[in-house]
Image 1: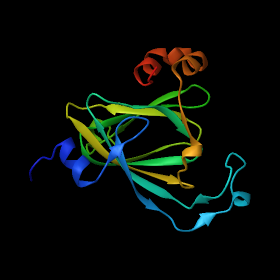
Image 2: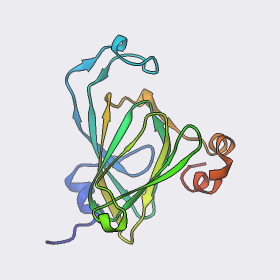
Image 3: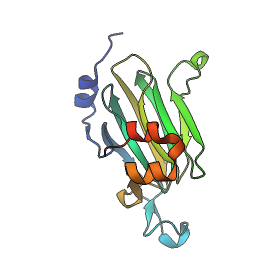
Amino acid sequence: MRTQTAAYWIDKLHLTRHPEGGWFRETYRATETIPEAGLPTRFQGERAFSTAIQFLLERDDCSALHRLKSDEMWHFYEGSPLTVHLIAPDGEYRPILLGRDPEQGEQLQAVTPAGSWFGADLAGSGEFALVGCTVAPGFDFTDFEMGGRGNLAELFPQHEALIRRLTRG
């Protein structure tokens, strides 16, 4: 089987730049919705039952620290292993290694819980990682919060080096 490049996947999957870094395309949005009254109070307005994207991260890029109001399930597809860096609201840090080699501690799927700060970068020596992300209740940009370097460093001074690496100013 021929090894594909990041440019190949970006073109074939019609990916565009994502505000957090990397490349993405929404591939699924449920047609049914949950009314606001049926959701926890952290949500304003209705949400699709679920949404999914394809997401590609290249070697010299990162998924900047951000958080969502929903859980997000990550699915590994192709390329280099990827580390998802997770900071829980209480400050506990947990790296999640996504990839195909369980002997190396890699997982094919993992969840970032709602309200946790998380970002990602490549863990292996490859040039890219291609993953999928599924969000339920479905993703809405009003539920997306990009992490600010100063605010996060103040909240979690024990993770300052990671915060500097995975924020954009």
